[in-house]
Image (tube, rainbow, N blue to C red):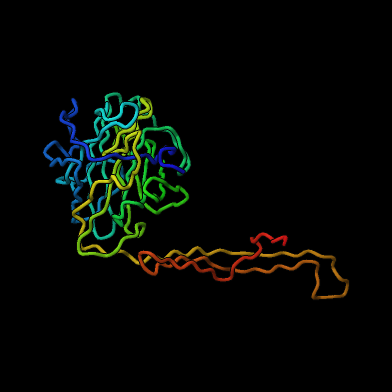
Length: 312
């Protein structure tokens, strides 16, 4: 499915300058993050190394966020392409040896009007939402997206061929939100085990952010694809600052139990045929990463009962 057709996917555009005017509200994330946090333009995003993990609770009060660079410069793609957003958004990026952390302050002049609908994972709920796009290979063609709406519903998927996505992938990551008088906030923790990347002393990834303001049908991006343009991942800005982290081994095991029951007419006088036969069994599916570009899929004791019969 095309990125333009999804609630969470979208498009991006060439670098645009940072918004000149700060929001009328106090430019704070929480009591711990104030306007003193350094602000960067959208040419690149720098991740800040943490000395300890951040507790993901959706409230940006952890002191580990303090000092992280504040990313601004969002512009509308919809409805008014290239115009300043009607609501300001600040994003912060941090990391440790195990995961990437994203914090977002999403200002809203009317927080009581924020649309927050609960839904199943990957459901399109037409809610206010925040999305992170990551290209860890930095090939400008592929990547991942991680989204959370104002009610805390998670959505994710993969990006491919620069401007297409697939939401069938479900990663293992954390996301929480919180609402207050300034709008709402979001915290995401994305383990490196969910991202494929080649080990290097220092990393340069691609990154982009999106905000949805549902009641205004507004979509704001750090970088966006013009409505008459093409390409999405290729337009991401660089994420820099990540160093001395190692891609973890990738191993997923899904065990399962199977059973087969047979019922038949009992044979009188036959102690070996009481009219029923139960055959239990166990098995497992496994995915083993053999490198950043190679994955081994294996099955132990497969359940062929789930295989469709070939009429030929």
